[in-house]
Every structure is written in C-alpha cells, then in structure tokens.
Length: 420
Image 1 (tube, helix red, strand yellow):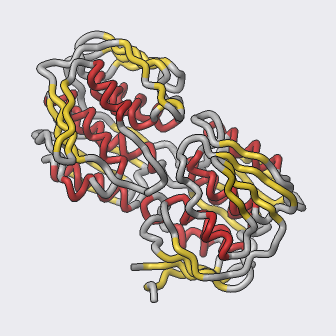
Image 2: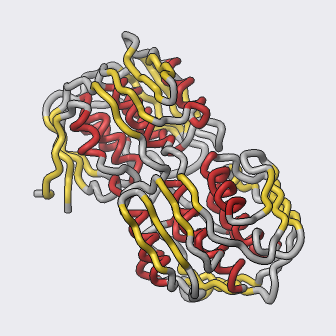
Image 3: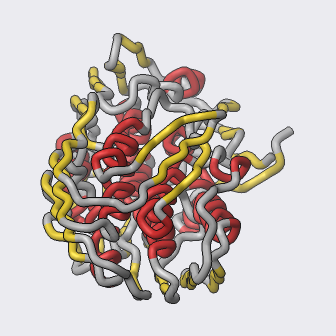
C-alpha cells in the first residue's frame, strides 16, 4: 500500500493541466450502455475509479479500449446484472442502473460502496425509477428493477440535503429511452449533469433544461453512438488553487472553468487569495496575509462539499476564527483529527467545524479516510514544517490523476513510497 511523503515549506510555482472531471466521466461511461453503437470519450482522466468503471462495463459485455485519455466503448450485447465485487468498491457504479433499465428493461445491481463520509441513500434513484413504471425490490444486497416498458412521468427528486446528482443522472439516462415525456423537478444543477445531458443529446436523446432545477426528457426509441469531450474537473482545480494559496505560491490552472467555480473563487478571494483569469486559464496566488472566512457547503451553485476538507486546511493557516458548516454529508469531518495531528486547532460542534487558524503546522504521519480528506492532508503537508507522511493514498488515486507528479512539477518535495 502506497503513501505520500511530503517535505513541506516550499511555495508551489508553475503551471498544472486540469484533467477531465471524475464526477462527469463515470455517468458518461455508464451512458454508453444505452446504445449498441461505438462511443468515443476524450479527456478521460487516469483514475482508479475510471478503471473500475471500465471493468464493470467489460463485465456487462461491452468492448472497452482506453488509449491515453481517449476511451472507446461498444456495448453491442450486454447483460443486466453487475458484478458484486466490482460495484461494491465504488458508489459511482450505481449509475449503470439507469442505462440497463432503459435499454434492457431490467437491472440487478449490488448496493454500492465508496468513501465512508456518511449516509448517501439511493432512495431518490429508486423513487425516480418507480415513477417511470419500474418495479424495484432490494434483496440479498442487490437492487432488482424491472419494467415491461418505461413511461415518462413527472417526478420530484429533492431530498433531505437537496437534489441528488447521481440520482438525476440515473433517472435521466433511463428516461431517455422511456415512452413519453419525463419532467424531473428539483433536479441537480451541477455541471457534471449538464455534461451528461450534452453527451446524451449527442447520442440522439431529447433533453432540455439541464443545469436548471427542471429537466425535461422526451423519450426516443433508440440512441446511437457519439463522441464527447469531458469537462475539466472543478474539484481538482479547486484543490490546486488552495494548495497554491496554502504554500504562498503562484500556480496557473490550465483549462480550469471559472464558470463552474464561482463559489470557490469567491471564498478564496474573501480569504485574501488573488484569483485572476488569463484566457482559458486561472492564475492563483497569495495576496498577502490570509483572512478567516465562514463557509457552508450547499448543492451547486453553492460551495461544494467536495472542497470542504481542502479549504479547512487553508483555514487552519488563516489567523482568526473560521467556521465551516457541512450541509450535505453528516460524517464528512473525519479529516479533522488528522489535521489536528499536524497542529491545526479545530473543534466540531454539530454540523460545523470551528477553526482557530494561524498556528504553524508541523509534519507528522497521518491517515487518509476518504478521497477529499486525502487532498486536504496533502495540502496541509505541503504547508507544514518538516515531513508529513499521508498513508492510504489509494483514496486519492480515485479522484486525482498523478497528483504527486503534478505537484513535483510545481516544485513540491513529494514522493510516493510504500507504507512502512
């Protein structure tokens, strides 16, 4: 098992290319199951989650070929059941259910796994399938869904923490081949949902309203092959932006989409970080003394929960009291205890973390609990005095392409080693 060994205190400087979005590419890969014709996806990031999804598609009968950042999939003949050992490893794998139900009229998928960051129920996915006319049963750790035919219907997919991104994607894919018109109210507005809708429309689907709280899908009889380029990863871009600020450096984010990052940029600027646009790129640099800030995670276009851990690491460096409130996942503070091992002063009160910033961080061995917590610990290690060893970095490989290599290009003293 690998770990990352970081010798901190070096300002990051230079350019980093932002990879394709992890959260966009997984549903897009699943959507290739909706047609028997070849699909080509470009700017595919080299991530363990992508490789897991490719294995799932292959298990289902699709021909999958990955050449660099280009993925070719042809799902000429597919089966309606997913492999338990593959699907349990990754929550994003649940998004194969909509395509299987839409194309075959049946799907059997194991309950998914993923990062342990609190309850992430799939009841809204199932509610949407049932609204389309599917019969859904959970038995023996598997979800069984079937329908003689899917029929378009109005539905409301709002939940306790707002709209559901994967649920919206899943239902949208199933509805693309349903008879009639489906209207999803309280649909997720994330850019990744828009990217999926763009791909589906390129396949011949009729979807309007993606990016708004109401998505309308007019079902079609068949979908055809298509080509698509995945959007840049706004979470990866945010992570490198925060790392630049934490180390008092200056980093150019090649290809970052400012229109996907308004809430993140706003909070960084509130903290005294300079973020400027140069053509298609973003330049991030510390503008001087960091300032404390309050952040609440919300569905898009609010501040993303996937950047909560990273900005907490930056808050630990800002003199004064910052407060971060988590409104999406109730157990997403597992990184707090590890940040305190590095010298951060953080207390949890209900859904909020109170960060008393301005203390120097000191390197120490820390344990990553999930994907974004891993990124936060790497950022803290880059800013800390001495050496930090981040263990269990298989989490970070799920969502960051070659993070240690990219950081070395920016001047970081970081290497991948085997855990001792």
